[in-house]
Length: 322
View (spheres, helix red, strand yellow):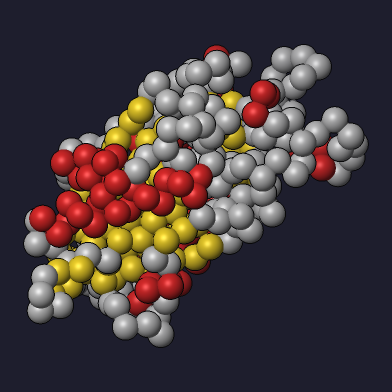
């Protein structure tokens, strides 16, 4: 195992990274299709084609999920992914060709690098060419290129974050993986110790300010309404799940964000988690509660890795450099 989301059979990942503009996008491809689900908990989301993942709707499988920077402008990257999938003959046969099902979510990274450069169709098309099922690069790449955390005092006192991924195998059989781009308003906290590993830098001294504690007290010097965040993630499994099951796993996986990001799901975040089930492992029969529980743990681990693997970029220090 690579201990990345590509350990899940049927999952491929690619990054498009623009270090000059400090933005990018990440694609998760399922060539054979995967049963999808989604759960949006943050109150400032930017998404595309999430309704098709609802259990009551017709489409049963998706072919790719795009995580991207560029705020709402970055949703254009999904068009390039659709075009690439079409050239590969991947999608639903509609008689006159194929129509790929591509869902997407964005994060806000316009305050770092160049605000006038965002991932578009060309980036989406290019990222598919480099997607594969090998180890996944983490840190300041893809959708996490411009990601930051700890925005209580605004972007000037934030800390660099990025993309993280992790995977586990349940009883040596079913694999559950996660990939996340962490661009949170809140602090990133190690669930095992409660220690803040990344948060707003203290304007009055060294170290990090505890956002939750500060929100219990004086907020006069904060930028509490800074609405430019969002943690976006994909959890995947090779188990067989229904659309209802996939949506439940996406819902439960948000617990992983709550374990590692505090506060989370605020009015200033657009936190969105997609779930994909490739169905390659037909035995043993998957228990949705087990898969969802493991997905939450794996996603929490991926959040920590997103911060640990990040590097100082565009004047925003990584946590290890604070």
